[in-house]
Image (cartoon, rainbow over all chains, first blue to last red; front, side):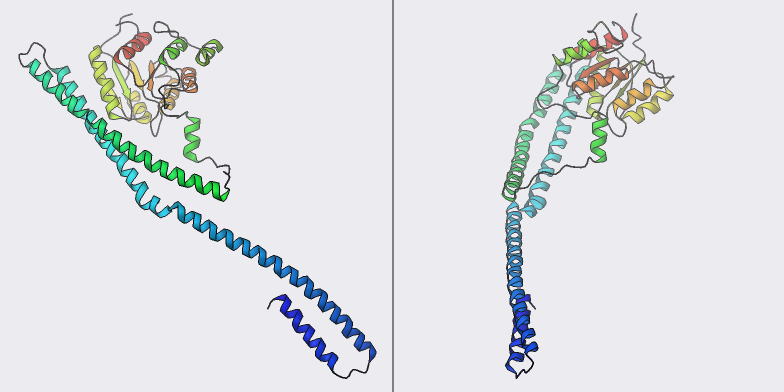
Length: 227
Length: 128
């Protein structure tokens, strides 16, 4: 029962007692004091109930808005359709790239192993060169597949960005996983996006050029890499 | 000093195509004994059984990386003198410096060409 209702009932009970024929003036005084106390309590609990109601209403609104924003993210669509589709495209890229590479390598190896003095050498080279050209057509299909994956990533990025912005989400510090720690410790950075971060000639300088072979790295070698 | 073209060379890479490319390039350069391993652990096992005149290793492999392989080789009395060339897409300055400090003899950034491979082998073993 809400506190304000309890106070109301106590007040009614007091009024009922006051309505009876009370002969002792001290009892009347106690009843008056009780009535004042109930009024004070009623005011206090009334304001308290309003505050709690307001808080709950705010939380309910926030939850409803959060649910709407999560629904706008379309997490089921991302999980069930978009990510599996992007994964399948990636697998197809790996497969086609591997097939094309094997075809190209096999053709090149056949030419490498062939005897140039053989009468059929020219025909063999022509045939293998054509095979290489045909195999290179994988790049066109791969490019289209990559484009579809990029679109999926942009779709997810856009929705997550909007969600974070609307909800006022700030990134928390992440705990490093075992895999991340291993990558950091063993300097597993992977290929740089725009080609090698340190060019081969800078590395050569570190190793004393093609003709030399320095045993130790000194500060000038390191400085040369950062120049 | 003339390079022994009959020496055994160990190519370490988890990507079969890259092993095939390096093997073909080495064959074109005239080397005859080329062995292969697909990660650092397999390479170490082979190095315990055979003596190699040169190791050409990738960096990024599982479970044992080329960097770990280099460290293990350099700390093993029986293998520490084996020439070691890193061939990798890891091109950050910190990678090059770490490999150099660990005792790598030369460092090639992927993608590379036949001339670069030949030049680096020559820098480590002498002209051939």
